[in-house]
Image (cartoon, rainbow, N blue to C red; front, side):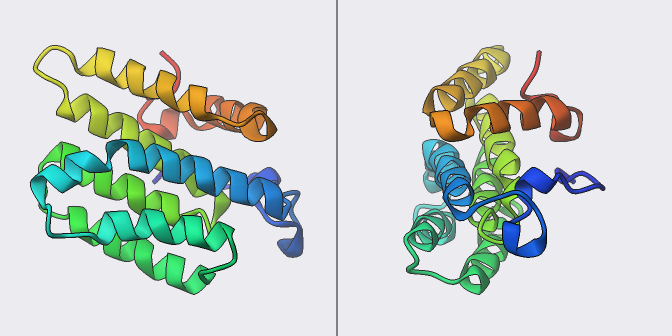
Length: 171
């Protein structure tokens, strides 16, 4: 479970009584999609004919442009997650990253799940003995992709939820 029991109002839309505006919500979704996109190749290598994770990533990007509904994204999250079922760890975590990314349309706080699962995918895909270095490199890459408008929000969220995200964000 990567979501806290008490929801952070910074990740709840203004329409639902929180502080999250649409522009920030979309920026979080795009960053989450970027994180998933960066590791989806680990799933593709395992199941090249299964496009559910790639479709999920494309769908959340479409959602940010107003070309997909929240309901479509919600359904795509389940499909991407199911694609990873019974897959080896790197492929499974890559599919889960895609599922979390598309779920940002429904619950913005899933942005951290996309990043955390991507880090776990990179760790699992690394050659023996190089997993920790691969995880750190993936985390660094993610940080470099953060737009200024959400950088402080995401980095603070990583500190707050590091423990429930398998301690992948803070050494």
